[in-house]
Amino acid sequence: MTVAPLGRGMFRVSDGTTTWTVAIAGPPDNRWVWVGGQVAKLEPPSKGRGRARSAVHELAAPMPATVVRVMVEAGAVVERGDTLVMLEAMKMEVPIRSPRDGVVRAVHCKAGELVQPGVNLLALEE
Image (cartoon, rainbow, N blue to C red; front, side, top):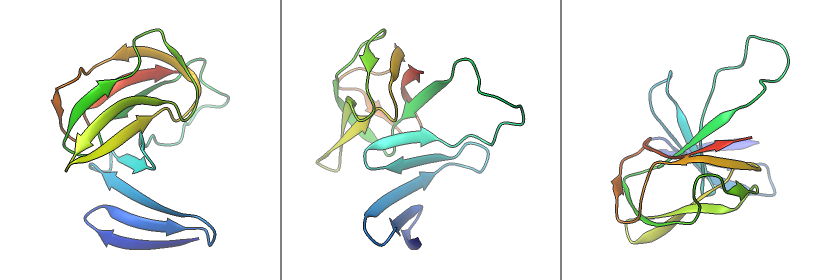
């Protein structure tokens, strides 16, 4: 595995077969990562044993952008990789995809809205 810095929170990561561009933003206690259209908040490892009974995952904007389309509404069942929100930044469309199967618990954005990095777009529950 190789990691090459590209500048200001951007990295190129390769496993020798596949290469990803990764963006990391936020202070150490509130760190966000963007990889291939998916955004996730990095959580510290759990101190408890076993799995939490329900995990809500907030999906956030990776950069300043305009919300072009919201493709889901609260209660929608989604699969990993489904496009949930389409953003536009610097004249490029940026899909926000589901990082896992789950249920959309809340949508916090609407088409035409300007969002900043780290702004929660929607909540996804396992």
